[in-house]
Amino acid sequence: MIDPTGSAHAQMLMDQIRAYQTKVSETREPDAAIASTEVQKPKFNEAVRALVESVNDAQLDSADMRSAFERGEDVPLTDVVISMQKASLSFEATLQVRNKVLRAYEEIMNMPV
Image (cartoon, rainbow, N blue to C red):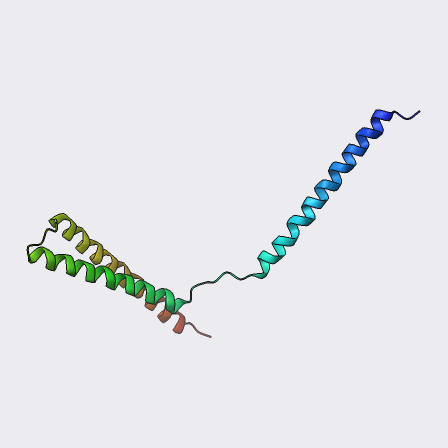
């Protein structure tokens, strides 16, 4: 004889499996749409240009603060020194990156083919 509570339990289990399968098929469709879109990556020349512009902006801000301090405007000396150090560090970091890129380029050009 078949237990009526067992068939109800089996039916609940089958309903849960179907619900799970539906959720899985729904989540796969948006993944395909996401995979088809490309992530915009910055180009190398754009990244270098942005880096140089940010270093230039830091240098200009530092010069403006220094000039304002020399004119006697209400600019704290600590802010002037900090902006000068930021500008100096950003320039040195950019210079080091440039040197590394040039060294890597030279090594690649000197590789035997």
